[in-house]
Image (cartoon, rainbow, N blue to C red; front, side, top):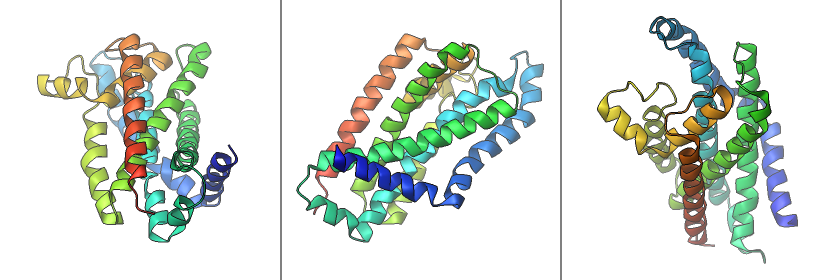
Length: 248
């Protein structure tokens, strides 16, 4: 546990020492909240769908977890490029503990950023449906952050340069987000978007969090939990397999 804790603490120190990173990480989600929440909110309300801010916040929280978690993998690339990862891999500790310590650090950072966004959303007028469900919502966010950070670590373990990592991320992350139910309800969406949203695992993460925060669900909370659990197992397994293939 000492190894896991030290690697987790290293990620925390690197994060809190970079003030620009903290501000930059929540800048884009806040822009989405302001531009979409207030820009499209009036149209959404006129269509009889209610308060768009309430609908949008769970999706933007998942977006924060997605972008922060996956792009955290670039830290592994930095460690690979400058030799720090090689020194860790030849140490007399298991690779699983090395991956776990780093991934938990990245997951904690993602959760901190999502929590900051939640506080900002509260200042903009968002209110949870049931305050008693907030601990469950944060537990779900923690699970998502671990899954998405593991996914980012697995991708970073596959590539050797920053450009390749950026290209893969752009190819995967943005379609996952925009083809989910984060920005629009799937109920009245065109058939193609509804089909793509239904096979997108991120849609179930948004739907589960949306149920806990505003009591709205498209797929059903039980199905959401099942898909989230499968996603966690698949992403962690993927990360472990790819990390074990890194040459020391």
